[in-house]
Length: 284
Ligand SMILES: CC(C)(COP(=O)(O)OP(=O)(O)OC[C@H]1O[C@@H](n2cnc3c(N)ncnc32)[C@H](O)[C@@H]1OP(=O)(O)O)[C@@H](O)C(=O)NCCC(=O)NCCSC(=O)C[C@H](O)C(=O)O
Ligand SMILES: [Mg+2]
Image (cartoon, rainbow, N blue to C red; front, side, top):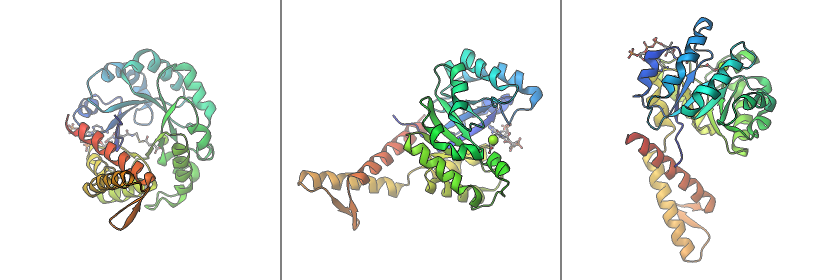
């Protein structure tokens, strides 16, 4: 069964109330954050408390732990703590500020088994996206659009003009190597219209979902990244028409005046699989 990653909520690992709340929220995945969301003085306590929080029941929600960067004073201890006390109850480890494949090697050596995810949020990461995506331990990639804008020296415009080249390179790299890829966060968590516009752009660019900072953003991401009823209906009709065509010895079908070939049927099957995974999540 595939897993949906429409809505991926960051939760500060130092915020016990928010962690407790996460078990009931409609998020497809949760990122337990030890990095930016946790103040320096709270980092050691947050790291120590996380194993117990991860051991709770979060249903089908994927559990990802974001450690501090390996260039920080906390990164190595976070990675070791993940390997010894968190890996058994987490689905993946997310590493910030990955710029090269060697950055992943460093964490992979400390954490022998868990799937690794990488934050892509530096100009060098954009240029090395293919090398990062090709890393054998990598499962997913997450855009860090705030850090990227800071490093580029660009403005956070609604059309995200300055980062579209980097985003495109990252999506190509992710798809070339079969990795998941999630968009960055939308900071104005009370601006539903802005979130919807950015999420629609994100979906149309090819992201699997959006990372989020507040529960109020979940419903929009879940809706935007889910197949619509029309898309599900079309997928079913495309598959049916193609199977009939094949049985009659034809290699193509026509649905709603449009050509359907085997590649369209692959997309249709992926759409139905995603819809099923979402339905399974909702049924919990
Ligand atoms: C953004 C916030 C600081 C807002 O907090 P607050 O003003 O307290 O929100 P509310 O009063 O509206 O909260 C209402 C209830 O919702 C719960 N809540 C809030 N946020 C979360 C959350 N993320 N997960 C779970 N639950 C949450 C509150 O506890 C309230 O509950 P209740 O008590 O029942 O009423 C805050 O939302 C926040 O801290 N968000 C997360 C920030 C974060 O994780 N930042 C780091 C990730 S983004 C990043 O790092 C950028 C990236 O690297 C890049 O480069 O782009
Ligand atoms: Mg960042």
